[in-house]
Image (cartoon, rainbow, N blue to C red; front, side, top):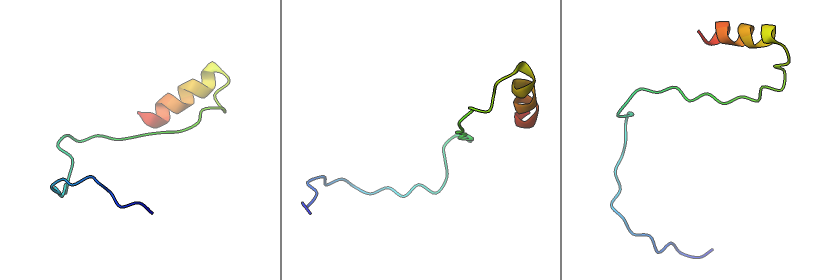
Length: 44
């Protein structure tokens, strides 16, 4: 294992500067307009 050559000061982050929600999913099940409407209602 090579040793890192990156030498920088460490900064601990305890919370985000701005609130955010990160969402990721695979929408292969979305086939009809009704599927999209159901997803939108869940997300709302």
